[in-house]
Length: 99
Length: 195
Image (cartoon, rainbow over all chains, first blue to last red; front, side, top):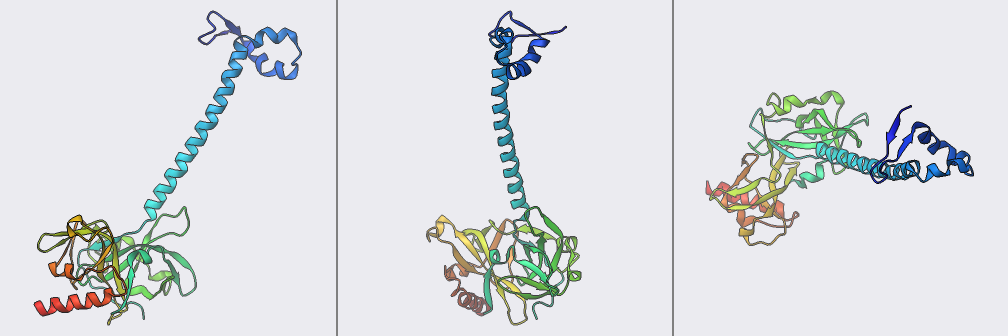
């Protein structure tokens, strides 16, 4: 069974794969299970906090990316659609017009 | 004098056929310096996601131009944008956008930069002509920050960077569009008398 190194700050602590699995399932399904309590104070718990932080960070990042993309799109569209007054070299004189 | 409009008033006007179909909206106004006549309008699609169209409305296809729409007979009267931009159509190759170009007198005085273009519609031959520029005055002009209208002669000397006007045009600067028609007539009359 492979293991994962704990992040910095929990030096020397190693978590097994089944701990990681329990982190997401056991505390919610069986919160009173004392067998899992020590794991909650270890890397699993720490990993939960990291996951929560990442969730908010990802949300903020996604919102910022969406705002930037929408703003960029609108700016590009405004530029593409904006008009001007274009001068040309003299050519064949125009004819006709409103009747 | 014909009805005067700012070019910005025409931008984004819908282009509508006799059948009531909106084929786009005005994007650019294309004109020739020789006589300042409008030769065509380029188009953009309608709606937020639409971009520039590859077709244009030559002035000869315009049957009506009012404050709310430009009317053409049918979509078949549109021409390819290439014809307009490469000189194969009613005008020669394009030199660029005159907005934000510097206006210089023939004596080398900078009058300001072009903020808008004044168009006279419904002249004696049913043509639409560029009759003046609305400029952001240069500091050296000593006229403050308020935009001014400057009349143009019949034949314009212009590139996309510098627009040349006779020095006498500076005597007819005004900030009143309703009185500008008279200034254009007086200016052109003076030019005709001088030459």
